[in-house]
Length: 400
Image 1 (cartoon, rainbow, N blue to C red):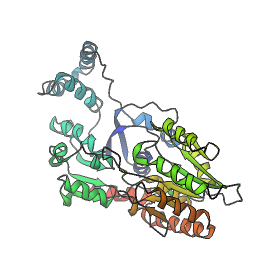
Image 2 (image 1 turned 135 degrees about the horizontal axis):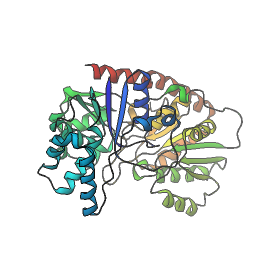
Image 3 (image 1 turned 90 degrees about the vertical axis):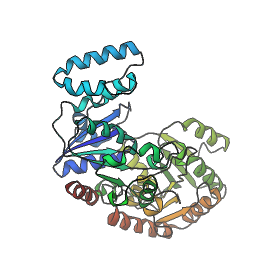
Protein backbone atom coordinates (compact mmCIF):
# COMPACT_ATOMS: atom_id res chain seq x y z
CA UNK A 1 0.00 0.00 0.00
CA UNK A 2 1.23 3.52 -0.80
CA UNK A 3 0.45 5.96 1.99
CA UNK A 4 0.95 9.73 2.11
CA UNK A 5 1.37 11.35 5.52
CA UNK A 6 0.46 15.05 5.45
CA UNK A 7 1.91 16.57 8.62
CA UNK A 8 2.69 19.97 10.12
CA UNK A 9 6.45 19.44 10.55
CA UNK A 10 8.83 16.52 10.21
CA UNK A 11 11.02 15.27 11.73
CA UNK A 12 10.10 16.83 15.08
CA UNK A 13 11.79 15.46 18.18
CA UNK A 14 8.74 15.99 20.40
CA UNK A 15 6.34 14.23 17.99
CA UNK A 16 7.49 10.63 18.27
CA UNK A 17 3.87 9.52 17.78
CA UNK A 18 4.10 10.41 14.07
CA UNK A 19 7.43 8.63 13.83
CA UNK A 20 6.04 5.52 15.55
CA UNK A 21 3.25 5.29 13.00
CA UNK A 22 5.56 5.81 10.02
CA UNK A 23 8.12 3.19 11.08
CA UNK A 24 5.40 0.76 12.17
CA UNK A 25 3.83 0.91 8.70
CA UNK A 26 7.23 0.54 7.01
CA UNK A 27 7.97 -2.52 9.17
CA UNK A 28 4.75 -4.03 7.80
CA UNK A 29 6.06 -3.59 4.24
CA UNK A 30 4.13 -0.47 3.21
CA UNK A 31 5.44 2.59 1.39
CA UNK A 32 5.08 5.81 3.38
CA UNK A 33 5.94 9.24 2.00
CA UNK A 34 5.85 12.28 4.26
CA UNK A 35 4.75 15.78 3.24
CA UNK A 36 5.38 18.42 5.93
CA UNK A 37 3.72 21.82 5.86
CA UNK A 38 6.99 23.46 6.87
CA UNK A 39 10.58 22.68 7.72
CA UNK A 40 11.88 22.68 11.28
CA UNK A 41 15.51 23.08 12.25
CA UNK A 42 16.41 21.03 15.32
CA UNK A 43 19.91 20.17 16.44
CA UNK A 44 18.83 16.74 17.67
CA UNK A 45 17.28 14.05 15.50
CA UNK A 46 15.58 10.85 16.65
CA UNK A 47 17.83 7.84 15.81
CA UNK A 48 15.01 6.07 13.93
CA UNK A 49 14.85 8.94 11.43
CA UNK A 50 18.40 8.01 10.42
CA UNK A 51 17.91 4.26 10.75
CA UNK A 52 14.93 4.26 8.36
CA UNK A 53 16.42 7.02 6.15
CA UNK A 54 13.17 8.90 6.44
CA UNK A 55 14.54 12.17 5.08
CA UNK A 56 14.77 10.36 1.72
CA UNK A 57 11.01 9.78 1.94
CA UNK A 58 10.17 13.32 3.07
CA UNK A 59 9.16 15.92 0.49
CA UNK A 60 9.22 19.56 1.53
CA UNK A 61 7.31 22.36 -0.13
CA UNK A 62 9.42 25.26 -1.44
CA UNK A 63 9.85 28.16 0.95
CA UNK A 64 7.53 31.11 0.20
CA UNK A 65 9.52 34.39 0.39
CA UNK A 66 7.98 37.35 2.23
CA UNK A 67 8.83 39.74 -0.62
CA UNK A 68 5.91 39.69 -3.10
CA UNK A 69 8.06 40.18 -6.20
CA UNK A 70 10.53 37.48 -5.16
CA UNK A 71 7.61 35.17 -4.38
CA UNK A 72 6.14 35.68 -7.87
CA UNK A 73 9.53 35.13 -9.54
CA UNK A 74 10.03 31.94 -7.56
CA UNK A 75 6.52 30.86 -8.56
CA UNK A 76 7.36 31.40 -12.24
CA UNK A 77 10.54 29.35 -11.83
CA UNK A 78 8.61 26.39 -10.41
CA UNK A 79 5.95 26.65 -13.12
CA UNK A 80 8.66 26.35 -15.78
CA UNK A 81 10.28 23.47 -13.88
CA UNK A 82 6.95 21.61 -13.87
CA UNK A 83 5.65 22.54 -17.32
CA UNK A 84 4.39 18.98 -17.82
CA UNK A 85 1.81 19.63 -15.08
CA UNK A 86 0.66 22.96 -16.48
CA UNK A 87 -3.01 21.93 -16.57
CA UNK A 88 -3.28 21.30 -12.83
CA UNK A 89 -0.99 24.27 -12.06
CA UNK A 90 -3.34 26.50 -14.05
CA UNK A 91 -6.27 25.23 -11.97
CA UNK A 92 -4.44 26.06 -8.74
CA UNK A 93 -3.42 29.55 -9.86
CA UNK A 94 -6.88 30.38 -11.18
CA UNK A 95 -8.64 29.70 -7.87
CA UNK A 96 -10.65 32.66 -6.57
CA UNK A 97 -8.48 33.27 -3.52
CA UNK A 98 -5.88 36.04 -2.84
CA UNK A 99 -2.72 35.83 -4.96
CA UNK A 100 -0.41 35.02 -2.04
CA UNK A 101 -2.72 32.19 -0.93
CA UNK A 102 -2.70 30.84 -4.48
CA UNK A 103 1.10 30.85 -4.61
CA UNK A 104 1.29 29.30 -1.13
CA UNK A 105 -1.16 26.56 -2.16
CA UNK A 106 0.82 25.93 -5.36
CA UNK A 107 4.03 25.56 -3.35
CA UNK A 108 2.30 23.31 -0.80
CA UNK A 109 0.89 20.98 -3.48
CA UNK A 110 4.01 21.03 -5.67
CA UNK A 111 5.69 18.00 -3.99
CA UNK A 112 2.63 15.85 -4.86
CA UNK A 113 2.58 16.66 -8.59
CA UNK A 114 5.29 14.22 -9.61
CA UNK A 115 4.54 11.42 -7.15
CA UNK A 116 2.90 8.11 -8.03
CA UNK A 117 -0.73 7.80 -6.86
CA UNK A 118 -1.43 6.96 -3.21
CA UNK A 119 -3.91 4.45 -1.84
CA UNK A 120 -4.32 6.43 1.39
CA UNK A 121 -3.85 10.13 2.13
CA UNK A 122 -3.57 10.37 5.92
CA UNK A 123 -3.57 13.89 7.37
CA UNK A 124 -2.21 14.27 10.88
CA UNK A 125 -3.82 17.09 12.90
CA UNK A 126 -7.17 18.57 11.91
CA UNK A 127 -5.53 21.72 10.56
CA UNK A 128 -3.88 19.67 7.82
CA UNK A 129 -7.28 18.74 6.40
CA UNK A 130 -7.68 21.81 4.21
CA UNK A 131 -4.63 21.09 2.07
CA UNK A 132 -5.99 17.60 1.35
CA UNK A 133 -9.40 19.02 0.45
CA UNK A 134 -7.75 21.28 -2.14
CA UNK A 135 -5.71 18.34 -3.44
CA UNK A 136 -8.85 16.26 -3.84
CA UNK A 137 -10.86 19.02 -5.55
CA UNK A 138 -8.03 19.51 -8.05
CA UNK A 139 -7.79 15.75 -8.76
CA UNK A 140 -4.24 15.61 -7.37
CA UNK A 141 -5.31 13.07 -4.73
CA UNK A 142 -7.09 9.93 -5.89
CA UNK A 143 -6.87 7.74 -2.77
CA UNK A 144 -9.06 7.52 0.31
CA UNK A 145 -8.61 10.34 2.82
CA UNK A 146 -8.26 10.00 6.59
CA UNK A 147 -7.88 12.79 9.15
CA UNK A 148 -6.38 12.24 12.62
CA UNK A 149 -6.92 14.48 15.67
CA UNK A 150 -4.40 14.74 18.49
CA UNK A 151 -5.45 17.48 20.91
CA UNK A 152 -5.24 21.21 20.19
CA UNK A 153 -6.88 20.65 16.78
CA UNK A 154 -10.12 19.72 18.58
CA UNK A 155 -9.85 21.99 21.64
CA UNK A 156 -8.35 25.34 20.62
CA UNK A 157 -11.11 27.96 20.64
CA UNK A 158 -10.41 29.24 17.10
CA UNK A 159 -10.84 25.75 15.59
CA UNK A 160 -14.62 25.56 15.83
CA UNK A 161 -17.37 23.91 13.79
CA UNK A 162 -17.19 26.76 11.25
CA UNK A 163 -13.51 26.03 10.61
CA UNK A 164 -14.18 22.36 9.89
CA UNK A 165 -17.48 22.73 8.04
CA UNK A 166 -15.97 22.42 4.55
CA UNK A 167 -13.59 19.63 5.61
CA UNK A 168 -16.03 17.10 7.10
CA UNK A 169 -17.75 15.94 3.85
CA UNK A 170 -14.47 15.45 1.97
CA UNK A 171 -12.91 12.80 4.18
CA UNK A 172 -13.66 9.08 4.22
CA UNK A 173 -12.81 8.55 7.88
CA UNK A 174 -11.51 10.23 11.04
CA UNK A 175 -9.28 8.98 13.87
CA UNK A 176 -9.06 10.29 17.41
CA UNK A 177 -6.54 9.12 19.99
CA UNK A 178 -9.00 9.15 22.90
CA UNK A 179 -12.72 8.86 23.49
CA UNK A 180 -12.57 12.33 25.04
CA UNK A 181 -11.40 13.75 21.70
CA UNK A 182 -13.99 11.67 19.88
CA UNK A 183 -16.76 13.44 21.79
CA UNK A 184 -15.09 16.77 21.08
CA UNK A 185 -15.08 16.35 17.30
CA UNK A 186 -18.64 15.00 17.28
CA UNK A 187 -19.65 18.34 18.82
CA UNK A 188 -17.72 20.03 15.97
CA UNK A 189 -19.96 18.31 13.42
CA UNK A 190 -18.05 15.13 12.56
CA UNK A 191 -20.27 12.06 11.95
CA UNK A 192 -19.88 9.45 14.76
CA UNK A 193 -20.15 6.52 12.33
CA UNK A 194 -16.99 7.72 10.53
CA UNK A 195 -14.85 8.08 13.67
CA UNK A 196 -12.47 5.45 15.09
CA UNK A 197 -10.53 5.78 18.34
CA UNK A 198 -6.98 4.43 18.06
CA UNK A 199 -4.57 5.66 20.76
CA UNK A 200 -0.93 6.44 20.11
CA UNK A 201 1.26 3.40 20.67
CA UNK A 202 4.58 2.77 22.37
CA UNK A 203 7.36 0.69 20.83
CA UNK A 204 7.68 -1.66 23.79
CA UNK A 205 11.15 -2.84 22.81
CA UNK A 206 12.41 0.75 23.09
CA UNK A 207 11.30 1.16 26.71
CA UNK A 208 11.07 -2.24 28.37
CA UNK A 209 13.47 -3.05 31.22
CA UNK A 210 15.04 0.41 31.31
CA UNK A 211 14.97 0.90 35.10
CA UNK A 212 18.12 0.99 37.22
CA UNK A 213 16.90 -0.26 40.59
CA UNK A 214 20.25 0.08 42.39
CA UNK A 215 20.73 2.38 45.37
CA UNK A 216 20.67 6.09 44.55
CA UNK A 217 21.59 9.24 46.43
CA UNK A 218 18.12 10.77 46.06
CA UNK A 219 14.56 10.06 44.98
CA UNK A 220 14.33 11.42 41.44
CA UNK A 221 11.24 12.92 39.79
CA UNK A 222 11.18 13.22 36.00
CA UNK A 223 9.19 15.18 33.42
CA UNK A 224 9.72 14.93 29.65
CA UNK A 225 7.75 17.62 27.84
CA UNK A 226 7.80 20.66 25.63
CA UNK A 227 8.04 23.74 27.83
CA UNK A 228 4.74 25.30 26.80
CA UNK A 229 1.69 26.45 28.75
CA UNK A 230 -0.45 23.30 28.37
CA UNK A 231 2.24 21.09 29.96
CA UNK A 232 1.72 22.94 33.27
CA UNK A 233 5.34 22.63 34.43
CA UNK A 234 4.93 25.67 36.70
CA UNK A 235 2.54 23.64 38.86
CA UNK A 236 4.81 20.61 39.21
CA UNK A 237 7.72 22.83 40.24
CA UNK A 238 5.53 24.49 42.85
CA UNK A 239 4.34 21.07 44.08
CA UNK A 240 7.93 19.82 44.23
CA UNK A 241 8.88 22.91 46.25
CA UNK A 242 6.26 21.96 48.87
CA UNK A 243 7.39 18.34 49.06
CA UNK A 244 11.13 18.97 49.19
CA UNK A 245 10.73 21.40 52.09
CA UNK A 246 9.73 18.34 54.14
CA UNK A 247 11.97 15.82 52.36
CA UNK A 248 15.33 17.18 51.28
CA UNK A 249 16.40 13.95 49.60
CA UNK A 250 14.61 14.74 46.33
CA UNK A 251 15.60 15.86 42.84
CA UNK A 252 13.42 16.95 39.92
CA UNK A 253 14.72 16.58 36.36
CA UNK A 254 12.89 18.24 33.46
CA UNK A 255 13.80 17.32 29.88
CA UNK A 256 12.53 19.46 27.02
CA UNK A 257 12.79 22.88 25.45
CA UNK A 258 10.35 25.59 24.51
CA UNK A 259 9.34 29.22 25.03
CA UNK A 260 8.93 28.82 28.80
CA UNK A 261 12.51 27.67 29.41
CA UNK A 262 13.71 31.03 30.78
CA UNK A 263 10.55 31.87 32.80
CA UNK A 264 10.80 28.45 34.47
CA UNK A 265 14.51 29.01 35.13
CA UNK A 266 13.61 32.25 36.88
CA UNK A 267 10.94 30.48 38.95
CA UNK A 268 13.47 27.85 40.04
CA UNK A 269 15.88 30.62 41.10
CA UNK A 270 13.13 32.49 43.00
CA UNK A 271 12.30 29.31 44.94
CA UNK A 272 16.02 28.70 45.58
CA UNK A 273 15.80 25.27 43.96
CA UNK A 274 18.81 25.50 41.62
CA UNK A 275 20.41 22.45 43.26
CA UNK A 276 17.15 20.48 43.26
CA UNK A 277 15.33 21.22 40.00
CA UNK A 278 17.24 20.82 36.74
CA UNK A 279 16.16 22.00 33.28
CA UNK A 280 18.14 19.86 30.85
CA UNK A 281 16.76 21.15 27.54
CA UNK A 282 15.97 18.86 24.61
CA UNK A 283 17.61 15.43 24.35
CA UNK A 284 17.66 12.56 21.90
CA UNK A 285 16.07 9.24 22.83
CA UNK A 286 19.28 7.75 24.21
CA UNK A 287 19.68 10.73 26.54
CA UNK A 288 16.06 10.51 27.68
CA UNK A 289 16.43 6.78 28.36
CA UNK A 290 19.26 7.42 30.82
CA UNK A 291 16.99 9.64 32.89
CA UNK A 292 14.18 7.09 32.74
CA UNK A 293 16.65 4.52 34.08
CA UNK A 294 17.42 6.68 37.12
CA UNK A 295 13.93 8.07 37.81
CA UNK A 296 11.56 6.95 40.55
CA UNK A 297 8.40 8.95 39.73
CA UNK A 298 7.16 10.51 36.49
CA UNK A 299 5.19 13.77 36.60
CA UNK A 300 3.06 15.41 33.89
CA UNK A 301 0.88 18.28 35.23
CA UNK A 302 -1.02 19.03 31.99
CA UNK A 303 -3.55 21.89 31.95
CA UNK A 304 -5.95 23.52 29.51
CA UNK A 305 -4.09 26.53 28.10
CA UNK A 306 -5.54 30.03 27.88
CA UNK A 307 -6.43 29.53 24.19
CA UNK A 308 -8.11 26.17 24.85
CA UNK A 309 -5.08 24.16 23.71
CA UNK A 310 -4.85 20.84 25.55
CA UNK A 311 -3.13 17.46 25.49
CA UNK A 312 -4.51 14.63 23.45
CA UNK A 313 -3.05 11.63 25.25
CA UNK A 314 0.30 12.57 26.79
CA UNK A 315 2.38 9.80 25.14
CA UNK A 316 5.24 10.27 27.61
CA UNK A 317 2.91 8.91 30.30
CA UNK A 318 2.68 5.63 28.37
CA UNK A 319 6.47 5.58 27.86
CA UNK A 320 7.01 6.16 31.59
CA UNK A 321 4.60 3.37 32.52
CA UNK A 322 6.24 1.05 29.97
CA UNK A 323 9.52 1.63 31.82
CA UNK A 324 7.82 0.80 35.12
CA UNK A 325 7.49 4.26 36.66
CA UNK A 326 4.48 5.31 38.74
CA UNK A 327 3.07 8.57 37.39
CA UNK A 328 1.45 11.67 38.82
CA UNK A 329 -0.65 13.52 36.25
CA UNK A 330 -3.95 15.40 35.92
CA UNK A 331 -7.58 14.72 35.06
CA UNK A 332 -7.07 16.30 31.65
CA UNK A 333 -8.46 15.41 28.22
CA UNK A 334 -7.59 11.79 27.34
CA UNK A 335 -5.03 11.26 30.13
CA UNK A 336 -7.42 9.22 32.36
CA UNK A 337 -7.81 6.75 29.49
CA UNK A 338 -4.08 5.97 29.62
CA UNK A 339 -3.40 6.13 33.37
CA UNK A 340 -5.36 4.08 35.92
CA UNK A 341 -5.84 6.38 38.88
CA UNK A 342 -4.81 4.62 42.08
CA UNK A 343 -3.37 1.63 40.15
CA UNK A 344 -0.61 2.83 37.81
CA UNK A 345 -0.32 6.32 39.30
CA UNK A 346 -2.32 9.20 40.65
CA UNK A 347 -4.43 11.81 38.88
CA UNK A 348 -5.27 15.18 40.42
CA UNK A 349 -7.21 18.23 39.29
CA UNK A 350 -5.56 20.70 36.93
CA UNK A 351 -3.50 23.40 38.72
CA UNK A 352 -4.06 21.69 42.09
CA UNK A 353 -0.60 22.16 43.59
CA UNK A 354 -1.54 20.85 47.04
CA UNK A 355 -3.05 17.61 45.72
CA UNK A 356 -0.10 17.03 43.41
CA UNK A 357 2.34 17.58 46.28
CA UNK A 358 0.41 15.11 48.45
CA UNK A 359 0.55 12.38 45.82
CA UNK A 360 4.26 12.97 45.12
CA UNK A 361 4.98 12.83 48.85
CA UNK A 362 2.97 9.60 49.20
CA UNK A 363 5.04 7.95 46.46
CA UNK A 364 8.39 9.26 47.71
CA UNK A 365 7.72 7.79 51.15
CA UNK A 366 6.52 4.38 49.95
CA UNK A 367 8.88 2.32 47.81
CA UNK A 368 6.52 -0.67 47.87
CA UNK A 369 3.73 1.47 46.39
CA UNK A 370 6.08 2.78 43.69
CA UNK A 371 7.04 -0.74 42.69
CA UNK A 372 3.44 -1.97 42.70
CA UNK A 373 2.19 0.91 40.55
CA UNK A 374 5.19 0.56 38.25
CA UNK A 375 4.41 -3.13 37.68
CA UNK A 376 0.75 -2.34 37.01
CA UNK A 377 1.85 0.29 34.50
CA UNK A 378 3.94 -2.19 32.52
CA UNK A 379 0.94 -4.53 32.27
CA UNK A 380 -1.39 -1.72 31.18
CA UNK A 381 0.90 -0.51 28.39
CA UNK A 382 1.55 -4.04 27.12
CA UNK A 383 -2.20 -4.66 26.96
CA UNK A 384 -3.50 -1.37 25.52
CA UNK A 385 -0.65 0.64 23.95
CA UNK A 386 1.59 -1.77 22.04
CA UNK A 387 2.42 0.16 18.86
CA UNK A 388 2.59 -3.00 16.74
CA UNK A 389 -0.99 -3.90 17.66
CA UNK A 390 -2.25 -0.35 17.10
CA UNK A 391 -0.53 -0.10 13.70
CA UNK A 392 -2.39 -3.28 12.73
CA UNK A 393 -5.67 -1.59 13.73
CA UNK A 394 -4.79 1.38 11.52
CA UNK A 395 -3.94 -0.95 8.63
CA UNK A 396 -7.29 -2.71 9.04
CA UNK A 397 -8.98 0.68 8.80
CA UNK A 398 -6.98 1.47 5.64
CA UNK A 399 -8.02 -1.86 4.11
CA UNK A 400 -11.69 -1.21 4.88
